[in-house]
Length: 381
Image 1: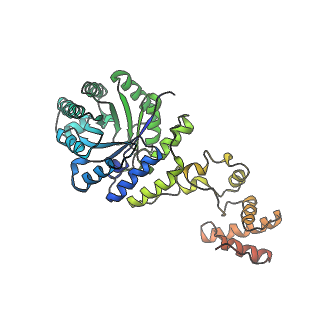
Image 2: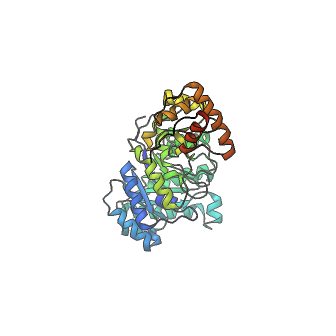
Image 3: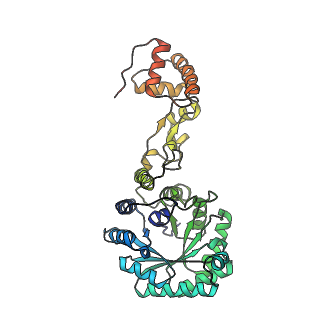
């Protein structure tokens, strides 16, 4: 693929719209700097029309001298766009609903007025030399013919790209591919995939859209976002690299640090099973898996832990095998015979069932001393 795929991160806007999440201004600035450092092309920094702290921190992000483009999110209202201009943003998102259920029930408006409002705001932004993304909210439920009409009107108003929003996560990859391919052919405008995760398909739908011709991927760190969240930055970048052979040259070794910071700032636990950045990505307990990973990590790991800022772990628990036991005791400077490892393993399995978890080093040492009558092992403090 020769097209340049660009990443638009909206952690600071859509991510912060997660129910119960508020970032401090210092956190928003730090997140923006971290996103810029790893290679994000455009940062949607917030909603300038909110004023107050929101407008203040967006100005701080703009003034931080980042390489990334800084975008302000706006309704399709000229006054909103003016607030983004006040902040010094070089790009704006002009967003308005495109589905009839939104137009009639939320906006209490008509299709014609939607296009008029969008065009007016877009034209105003272009007069001020801004990069413009026209956001088709709820595009996945919009009448296809109206969406084409909307996209063409955006192009005529000077829009640089069209953001296809699967606002309530109803798309699936096969339908997404066909819809986006047709949209690009009919409108002739760059398309951004902005997919929500209500049915767990946000990343898959993003990849499907890119395969169909979209050139922008809208993401958030760890998939933070309203309801079930958005397509996750780390998932999209790594999937593009390993599944689509598109290397964006991101500093992926910083993904774990970024994920932890955003999770803590958001007051959300980072699940150990989270794809790409969760600690269980490279944790092996099952005897067959652990043995394979010890011999050649590629047997059970699609990427290396170092590439995303993690480390490999061999967990000693109910499903461990003798290879894991022997490897663990090598860390203590002890070479176990196969029979000795088998004796210890039997005790390990019994204890893990009792305590309902893997074992700590001190528990393993206690089993070693009790079952083999060996000398005490000095563990590093």
